[in-house]
Image 1 (cartoon, rainbow, N blue to C red):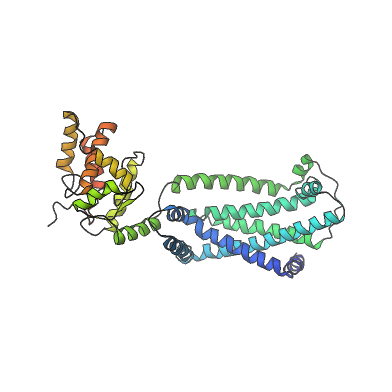
Image 2: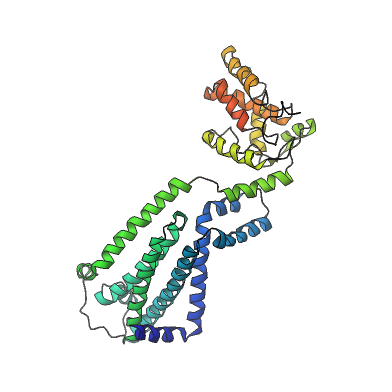
Amino acid sequence: MLQTFLFSLNQVFSKPRYIVLSITAFIVVVTLAIWLPNLNFLGHITVSDTFSPSQKIGIISSVFGSFQTNFTPFSRAITILVSLLFAINFSFFVYFFLRAARFSKETGIGTSGFILGMIGIGCATCGSVILSSILGIGATAGFIGILPLKGQEFGLLSIILLSISIYLLSKKIKDPLVCNAKPATFKSLIKGIPVWIKLSAFILLAFVIGVIFTQRLLYGESITKEALAAKFEKLSQSGNSSCSGDFKDSISKMPDNARLQGSCCSPMNWHRYSEQIEGLKKYKNIAEIPPDPYDIEAGLAKKLLSGYDDKLSPQQQKAYDFAMANSDEKGPCCCKCWRWYVYGGLAKVLIQNYNFTGEQITEVWNLSDGCGGEGDHVNHK
């Protein structure tokens, strides 16, 4: 077994292009293993208008540091080993595939005949080798996909399947390209697949499906703490928001895709900011409620400003007055800046269009406090 592997290893990697191919495959798998647990973070950074291109590149590059901080020594070792075995398996597969293609051309086998033969329709023995290689690649994909959920036991499964795939490919590389097996039908191909491959394929398929649904359930729409921290850093240091009347009047002249960013009165507080973002997720299905009170699109601000002067019915006014009396800031904001009129207009929209109660308006105002600091400012000296 070892002699077969060493012979094939020398045969394949005596050609520099396969060394380059293996190194590339290794880097790609390690990169995916590091990036996948941070996929939501990377997606948010990529599409965010908050960061410049150079800042995006810097933040995305910094994610590689998580391999040291977010991975345990055991998971790092398994990740490196799986990536290495995948790289070897991939190079062996490409070598075997290209050599078989050349042999088919020399012996006059057509392209369609070659492809059918490789997937096992022409030869059940070759087909099992190809299927085992694909299964090894699938196991690697499954292992990488489960990394965020700490499923390291599946890393061991990947190692076993990749090792078997490498051994089977080693045998085919060492053996002459002459196949004495009888032509196989699709039915005989399925019957000829070893039971362990069928069972492993079923387990892997169920596992991958489970990973997809679990990730959607746990991570589907959440912004990671890393992304939120990066956004907080940006908003707290380079916001454009101001309490002045001139700033309020300038909103109507801004492009709709411009952003009103940062706090008005006090420096932003990370703990309070993260609480607000989490609390506002409750209202994510209401488009008029900004999901981030420190980063509001100018087009939405204009719409809400226009609603501030709307007249409410006596019953609706009671809900508005309740919020005025019971909110932390005793109103939409601590002073009559642009936020006062934007969030005052928001309250009237929510009361008129969504039948919000005074308690609900109070909660929205408290969660949307954009003054900065740890809480209300009316009672601050």
